[in-house]
Image (cartoon, rainbow, N blue to C red; front, top):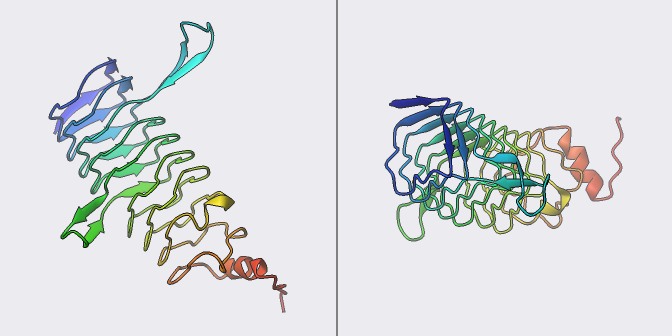
Length: 229
C-alpha cells in the first residue's frame, strides 16, 4: 500500500488515474476531480474533501462551498474513515464493498451509484457500509443498499425516494417523518430508531426487527392507548 500523509491538493485533476491500494491520511482535497479514477482497496482517513470559508469574487465575505467529484469512479472496497465528504459527487460510481465510517456526507450525491454486483439481469446482491455518518440532504434516490450495514446514521432530509434498504441494518438511525414510505425497508433492523411518526397502515413492515419499547410507538399510531398494566 502506498501511504500519503498531510498533503494539500487544490484543483487537482486525478481523473482516470490508478490510485488503487493507496492510503491517504490527514490530506486536504479542495475542488479535486476523481472522476473515473481507480480507487479499489484504497483508504482515506481524516481527509477533507470540502473547502469552506473562501470569499466569493462577486460578494466579498460570502462563503463558497465546493466538494469533490467522484463521478463514475471505481470505489470497490474503498474505505473512508472520519472524512468530510460534504457536497461530494458520486454519480455513477461503482461502490460495491465501499465503506464510509464516521463521515460527513451532507448534501452528497449518489445518483446512479451502485453498491450491487449483478449475477444476472434480475439477480444481484449488495455489499457496503455507511456507519455513524451524516447523510442529511444527500441524494440516495433509487439506490440499492439491501443487506448493508447502515447503523447510527443521520438520514434527516435525505432523498430516499425509490431506494431499497431491504434487510439492511438501520439501527440507531435518525429519520425525518416524511421519509417513511418513500423507500423499501422490509426485513430491516430498526432497533433504536424513533418510530413515533411511522404508520404501519401505510408502510410495509414485513420482517422488520424492532425493540420491545418500540411496539408502543407503533400501536399509538393506530390510536391505541398503552398502559403500564
